[in-house]
Length: 285
Image (cartoon, rainbow, N blue to C red):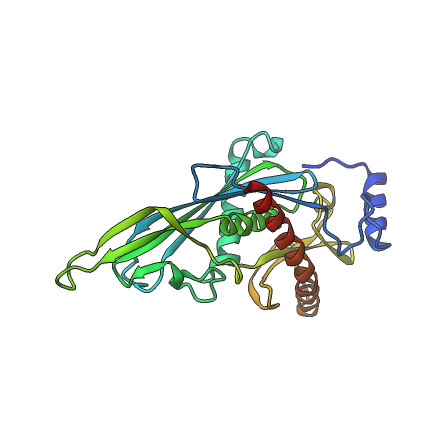
């Protein structure tokens, strides 16, 4: 928990009200974003992302599996977040476990849609090789290395960057003599198919402090929030998911306005993130 004196709280809130935050940003301005890809050689794809002093790492591991009986035409994606105890004192023990679970659930809600896969921002049908028989299972592991606010947006950006860095091995499938037989698969060690991230959204969290709301809140700013709404938006401006935290209720008109701001801000955010990912992958080569 961030400890601020009463004077510091008033300074922080007053700056947000005046559209000049403590670090010099406006209410709708992100901190500088840094991206590094290919940071975990053993993974199919990985990325490190920094928003100011917040640093996270995401890795993608792909394994061949079998689609579920309920959704034979879809592959599977699992997201797990771990908060390093060194990132912040509150992450030690149960506090870190609870936040890890909260972030994992929020990311799945924003990126994977409902339990049926409806509304999924990641196209699960693209992971199927043979309907009902063979699919890719993607395991997304994310680690919070250091925390200074806005973890959800940072994690989503790292996952998007890691997916962009992901190569799925080319698979040759030989169907069995009968429909009941499991197909034979030959996984290439040399040919890889790049994962398409064009539809993968970013998450923009609007944090309400006083009567105003801000993007990319620091830990100090989050300590003064009444509530926050996180919106996942793709490059076409479509809303892919939404989640709220904080005990204070919000008027529907306020939520509508926050979503509108998130849609507007997301387009520049996606552009900056795409440029950083492209630069990172170019330097990796």
